[in-house]
Structure formats: structure tokens, C-alpha cells
Image (tube, rainbow, N blue to C red):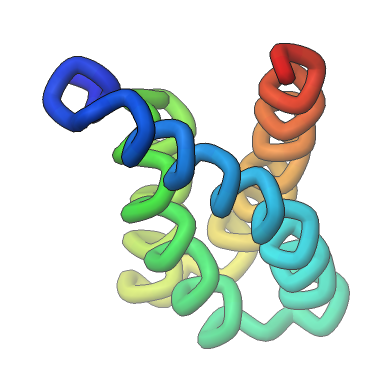
Length: 102
């Protein structure tokens, strides 16, 4: 299910535009967390991203953000790093594709 079907179009468009504005900074924070091997930061950013991305109905990206959180919680640092890097790559593609739509 996607919020566009549930919310007025104007509200949904504003949410998407806000996400597009914030996404590059969040991707940068993810990459920095991986570079610094800071799993606490990765869990925090992934949690925030999961909520934002879920609004768009992008389940595979939402699931990947959740996986980063789970790996951190379970003490699986290497898996968290790998998934966070994959998440950053996927988010860059999402951002590029959504920016092309406008």
C-alpha cells in the first residue's frame, strides 16, 4: 500500500519533495557511518529512513533499512556495514529516479 492512494495528492507531493531534499544528506550520513564503522549512527539513520521510505511504498528499501537496524541490534557489525552500504546505493538510485520524474 502506498500513501499516495490514501492522502490528498498535494500532501503526498509535499512529503515526496521533502524526502527528496533530505535524502542526499541522509545518504551522506549512512556512508560516513560505514566509513567510521559507527553502528549506532547506522541504526539511527536507518530507522529514520525506514519510516520516510515506507511512505513511498518502497518495500524492498524499507526492508533493507530494517535489516541494518536488526544487524546492529544483534551485534552483527559486518553485516550491518554491508547492508548499510547497499542501502546507500539503493537510495541514491531512488533519489536519481525520483528527481528525473520532476
